[in-house]
Amino acid sequence: MNQDYVTLTIGKQKSIALIAHDGKKPDLIAWCEENQDILKNHFLCGTGTTARMITDRTGLPVRGYNSGPLGGDQQIGAKIVEGKIDVVIFFSDPLTAQPHDPDVKALTRIAQVYDIPMAVNKASADFLIRSAYMDMEYDHDIINFQKNIKDRADTL
Image 1 (tube, rainbow, N blue to C red):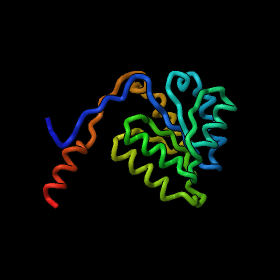
Image 2: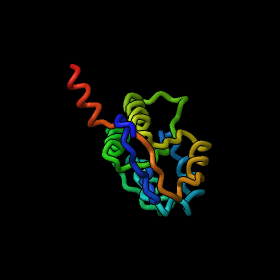
Image 3: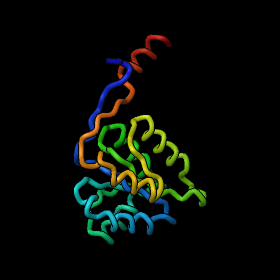
């Protein structure tokens, strides 16, 4: 086995982060309503306002973190690093400037580093939520960070 990577398992019940920019919140809420039967089988969390609006409209329990511009994107990124988020559904608004764009980019980057499935619009969310992997465990390889740190410390 390649020691540069470690295998992690995403469990059958997923921890799904739900995030939407202001202009896309109605779209994400409608998507959650359409997919309520699937989402109710998973643990849901999200940035503050989005989480609250989804719970209010759908009755789905969504654990809320801070609002995105107030650090919520970073909180979700930290949960990815801790291994506590398996999937990110982020309805982003590519046509509107976002004051917290660096946070959004950091969240996207950390999801890529940790090999976390991430949907950025309705079509990709539809494909992801209807994937056969949503109902089963999934093994994925990520960088062996302990080895990476040791190797970097030995060479610097």
